[in-house]
Image (cartoon, rainbow, N blue to C red; front, side):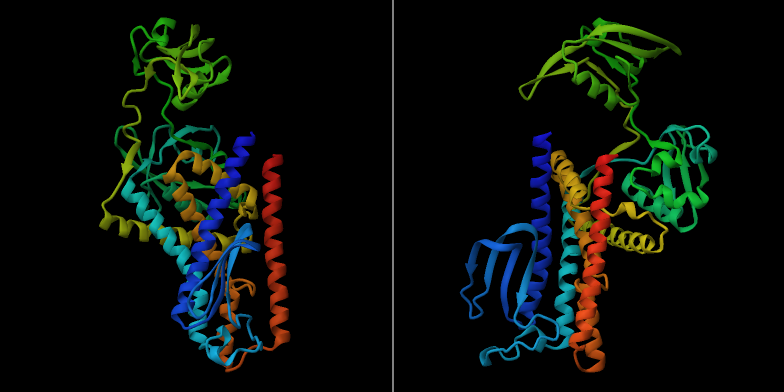
Length: 455
């Protein structure tokens, strides 16, 4: 438990540090291009624990600060409407002395670099190749929305409305989008014999409830397809063979614990090295139980249970390696970044109107858990996690809230239209509203985190 929490914390710190550094570097580099004087570039808040002073005429301080939960770039005269004095040698280089168009460009640069980072992360992923599970239908719950629509085990989702469903990520985005829009999801399905059919899942006014975290599949009434614990091979002389398992057996439980997929079988067996366990299975449509001694093998210095059985090519129709060359990956990455950005924006808008549950707002605890689990799974899952969070940061920072980049863009746009800055009173009122909005958002996030832990 402690090691898991430590992994989550370290992965969270790495993720936030990287993404904030990317965001602030966007402000920094574009600010320099626009002729602004930069006083400090800091990753983290609070007291600097490491500092380097640049050799240029600006003497910019580059810092790593004690609290790794953000970062900032400090420009000369950066406060909106600032009347702070500027040395004669720096005249014209303060943030508030540069043209409005350049200030807005600097403010846009932070979110843009977040989107650019996501694009690059996806580009690397597509070049590396991503093992991808095609969206297939697993167990269907009787008397559910899915059952009413005629979904059956083994059906593969080919299209959601008019969008191709090449993997579960794109399928889920499209399903949520359609469901929230009008309460229906139109699916083109491919049956196991290759026959194509179209059906519509209608959830009506239940759509908001189904947007709550973890509710979609249970609410619709089906689970994603996973390879069943159906034995295609039983190695002669192995633990499974010696214990009486045969090709064609479908394992349903071990010591009373349900087995739905081959992954469940692997997990339960690996935890019982050398133990004698009761296997419940279906053989020739007959339910039976046998006791067998599970084998044992060394895996990274630890003993793990082993049966010497396999599922053969049962997953061949559902798994594939999604991989492209460097040039093809550019188009794929642009499409994935654009689709994810639009989806994030739509979900935020629908949360504001009550169409999507605000329980989807995640705080640092939940983000840290996702960071830890993705980091433990490998570099590709962690890159995918960073890309998604980077897009979220980019979109959030563009919201017209005064303390965020989007709010500052509104301020400077108004100045460009009226020819003078907003009054100090108007700025103060706007900032107070912005702080209140951010605190409210943070309160929802922390509440959701705690509610997930308690539940």
